[in-house]
Image (cartoon, rainbow, N blue to C red):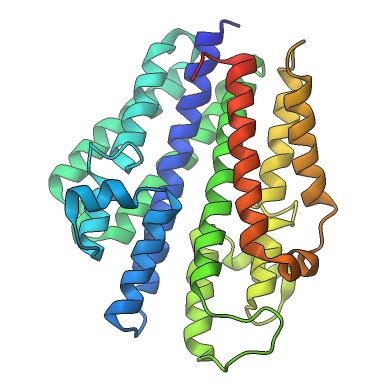
Length: 317
């Protein structure tokens, strides 16, 4: 396969997944913003969301003070923000158009229809009138794109590069969401801190779990009240949780092995080490050494892995 083709397929999937994850992060902030809290606490939540995508400087240059309405505008419909939902879905559609002949009709039509319908929804102000409903639509279109891809594409290198992009992006975004949300909440994982409002905590952690489609899964796996350390375990170490770091890295390693070439041994080794750390890790050890430090290091390694994949298989960054 031409590296140019692989590059378009890889980034088409990454941008589609990124749009979905941006919608998930925005939705959890909208949901937690409905809880009783001071304006200062609410601002911290929106500030944390910007820090997830490393967009604080860009946002402040354009909008100044942080507010829910301005952050939503910046992260949903601002074309000057390369990580906004509109920018991601436009980039996904343009990458799909560049390799139209490689895609099945169903995959192309799904990407194209998503872009056309997005423009209509933004023009109608759907993201302002009912943000949660709009975010559900973004997630649905991403689910549809993945399902059509798996259901209609030939199981060759094209599909493997698309899956590689999807799960590398998912690992990155899940780690960012966890890092910001756990860092922002004053919960003591070791159980020896101030008493917190249990009702507030329940709704907060429920919103985080729902943002990664993990609420029902948590109930099924743990059959207990929602505890921060178990949320961390579910989203970091559980291989059967679809959006966990472990499950994402399993897919990255698997698809990377299917497209391996003579130059990619070091890249495969890095991916394997990352997966092994999650496979044999223990959540208590991670929490004891610091979840923030663990996730920061994981994000650095995922970023390095993405760079190595670009170097070994795709066009130069």
